[in-house]
Length: 334
Ligand code: ADP
Image (cartoon, rainbow, N blue to C red; front, side):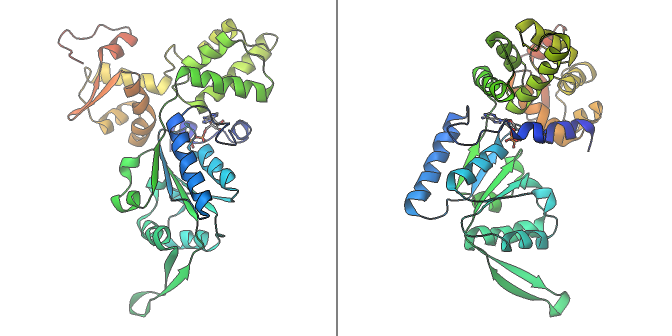
């Protein structure tokens, strides 16, 4: 995987851990998802059973992992963590499932990347809390049924469309996480600054919030970078002027587009005359994985009103041409 993919899809490790919200009340934004999840969890608690399986979908960095941790915490259950790519063989999943204790929450990140045999085993585990483990090969192979303790699966995906129908159908509740509003990001930044012991002026956090691509992970990351700047070049206090100067150093433009976003827009406009162009062609033009362009860049560019998806491919809007300092073609209708 390229550096950019790694930078976006990987979490920031320890730096991020301390900033995670730990309860539904602590979680800022996504009011609908929070209300729906509260009902799902309270309903299960009232009846004394395990809640339905939960699917969280949305672009990277919007709080899916944090939400999975919160689900376990709210239920007072242990959280077991794995990911789709780690479940290459059915045996990997069988091992994970057989270790579960009643009430556990099993978190599978990037669940759309789970291998087929593991996925088929997961169907049965989700529905009947059992798995069939196949022992041996060829005509002598036997299948041994194994009971699994009742658990709640929390799956996270950046591409709910890539999930097979049977897998999607086995989730009792699907939450779509959307990009955050600047005011919500500002609240998240204020909370993070408190935790990190950073002094930041409200106008400065507004400045960072406006350039965070609607994404809490990016807001927190920019806060840490701006703090470096404030510590090294000033007295540590983040003023609006310090925030602006630091964001220039880190190559974040006024709309929050980063280098890859701008490369995608630039290719779309300059190499393909504004489109329409397919996502793979676009990805090749910027030297990036199609999945990264589709799951990381495109959702935000669409949300920012710069790219439109059409049946014939991606098209740059007038806003995209203008953002790059170019004049849109006269016949552009989008
Ligand atoms: P995802 O799993 O969707 O990629 P994460 O749950 O790992 O996203 O969130 C990334 C980081 O963003 C977290 O470490 C946390 O600091 C921050 N974060 C995400 N959502 C929120 C929120 N609603 N409130 C506060 N911080 C958040």
